[in-house]
Structures are given as structure tokens and as C-alpha cells.
Length: 276
Image (cartoon, rainbow, N blue to C red):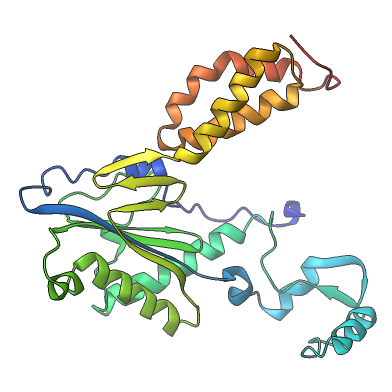
């Protein structure tokens, strides 16, 4: 478990609340508009991997190397590394306290190294990070959220296709893709435009909105509670979970549910029977 490991260093992921604090109002003058570009690294944790020496810390109980080797050979897959009797992961496991830090540190280092070499404008100065004031005095900002990355900026209104190809948002997205591929990673799910979904929110031109799909789910759940007037406490917790996602853009707004949180807390250790 994590008890045997030191705590990882702090790392600030990009967040919707930090993105909502980004102020481009002075840059958005006549003839200007906002554009967004994003991408994703496929199978990021598997490509990232871990040193073989760390596999012993992530053993899989009940699975022997002999059984796994036989299954691998039957499927015609590459042979298993190592000669031990047990099986261990060479991937930062979900729940491992260092997984997020390692993944975030690598993608940031790839872009920071490119920035130092003048291969991209995406550097520490215009990175959006939770808990850190958003960048100012710039027409370009960027996000990294583990395996997701994106570029946000103010550009001249689209004209000819030649002008579009020289858009700084698109140029820096391309440089980000090139840097990641040179580092051994793939890139997919790329998109570019004025209306994009990004780290749980939705951009619409110069507006940043909460996830519009999830709010309808939350509304339907609340309506069901009002109509039935009785439900399982688990259902109430589910509703709060959906709203928690919706309010990522402004976490302070979750205070409107303080009485609901207190209600769930009082019943946390009781049996899941219907409550009025």
C-alpha cells in the first residue's frame, strides 16, 4: 500500500476553476476571438511505465509467473520479462500515491524542455495550474491534466486558410504534438475550434461553461427525489457526486449543499434503508 512510500511532491494539475480565472478581456478587442485546441496521449501510463526494479512493489496476489507465461504463449504475445515466480506491475497503478505526480511531471517536463529550446511558446509562465494565479499579459495559455493537454488563446478572426494555418493556438498545438511524439508518446483525439470540451467543462467562444450533459442527469435525479419523496441515502450521495462534477468550475458554490452533506454524514454508518 501507500503507507510504505513517502508522500509525493505537490503538483498542480490544470483545473476548471483556474481556467475560469483566466482573463483575456483586454486582449479580446475588435477583430479578435478565442480559439481552443486540445489532444490526448493514448495509453499514457502504459507507455510511461515504471523501472523493472519497481515491479516487486506491485505484486499481483494469486497469479504466478508460470500461469501467465503459459497464457501469453497461447495468445502468441511477446514473452514475459524476468525469471521470478511472481508477477508485478511495471505501470503506475491506479491508487498509487505517486501515479499522478509522475504522469504530470513528465508531460510538463516535455513541454518545458521544448520551451527552453524555443520549440514552443508553451512554458511555465503561461501554464494553468490549480492553486496558482492564472497567467496575465499573454494571449496564450495552456493546460496539462495527466494525459490531456490543450492550448487556449486570443487570435485574429479567421480569414483565409493561410491565415488559419498560422494561428498561434494551432501552431503551438502542433509543436506540442511533435514534442510528445519525439519523447515516445502518441497523440490522438485532437480538435480545434471555438467550441470545445476541455477537462470537464465546455468552451463556447469566449464563455466557459460547466458540463452541460451532466447537469441534465443531476436535474433528473433531483426531480425523481421530489416526486418519490423517499430514496436510498446512496442515491442522495450520487446526486451530490454529479453536482460536485458540475461545480468544478467554482467549487465554492458547493456550499449550497452544506445541509445535504450534513444529512449524508449523519447517516454514513447506518443501514441503507429508505429515508424521508
